[in-house]
Length: 205
Image 1: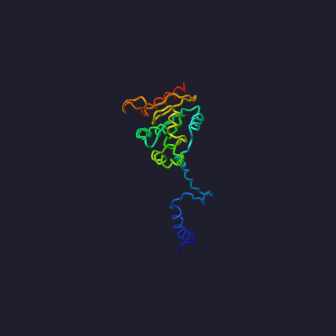
Image 2: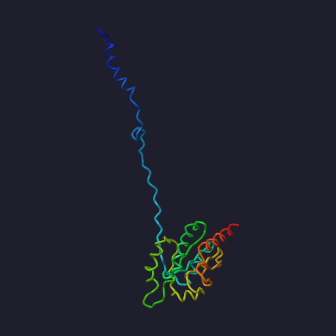
Image 3: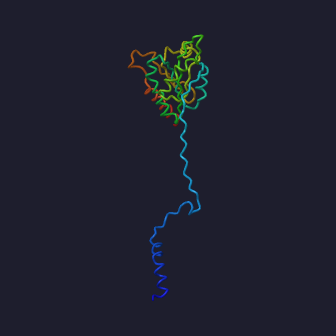
C-alpha cells in the first residue's frame, strides 16, 4: 500500500505541470485597470472653395491696398479671350508655389459688358466654372464696372494683363501684350514669376 503522501503528489503533479507550461498572456485592459482608447483620426482640413465677388474699379484698388506688405499679382482676364484662358493656369501655379512666402494672387474677370438689364453679378455663372476647373481658390473678382470703363481706367487696350505690386504697394510692372507684334513675343507667367522672385528676394536683403 502506497503512502498517502505519494498518492497526493501523483494527483497534484499533472495540474502543476499544466500551470508551469502555460504561456503567460499579455495584460489586457482588465489586467492593468486602464481602459484602451483608440486614437481619433486627424480631422482633414476642409477644401477651399472657389468664390467670386463683384467689385468696381475702386473696390479692386482697395483690395490691392489692403494687402500692403505682400507681393500682389492681379490678373485681368475674360472668358471670351483665348490668350487669357491660355495663360490663366500660370496664376494658379504661382499661388500654389508662393502663397506661403507672402504672395497674394487676385483674378479680375472683365466679362461684364454693361447691359442695363444684366448686372455684373449675372455673369458669375459664366465665370465661376472656369475658375473651379483650375482650382482658383484665391481672391476672384468680377469687375462691377463694364469692360470698356475698366479698360479706360486701367489704360489698357485689352486683356490679358497682369499687374504686379511690390510690398510697399507701388506697381512694380504691368505685363500686357499691347506692344507685341506676334504671339511669340507675348508675356508668359515665367516672366511674372521672375519678377515675383526678385521682389521677394529684395524684401529679405
